[in-house]
Length: 86
Image (cartoon, rainbow, N blue to C red; front, side, top):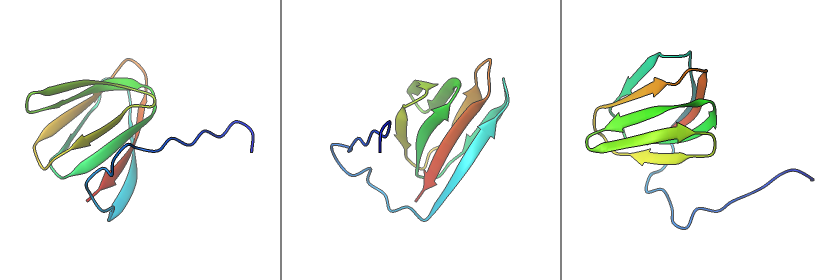
């Protein structure tokens, strides 16, 4: 199939998926959480702040966050994330 790219992670993300959801945030909106999750940015941009971590979220970025309070803020456009929960 042309146009499909598969990339393997160098190591397992350290969780077993029990649930997956798509998070869609309009510009400037916030999402708060506190579970072990892996976020995959599907579209748009934003920021994730969790403890001392401050990550720019752009398409293709994958971030694993432990069970700590966090805030995700959409940038000037919509932000679409795939959230995989443990």
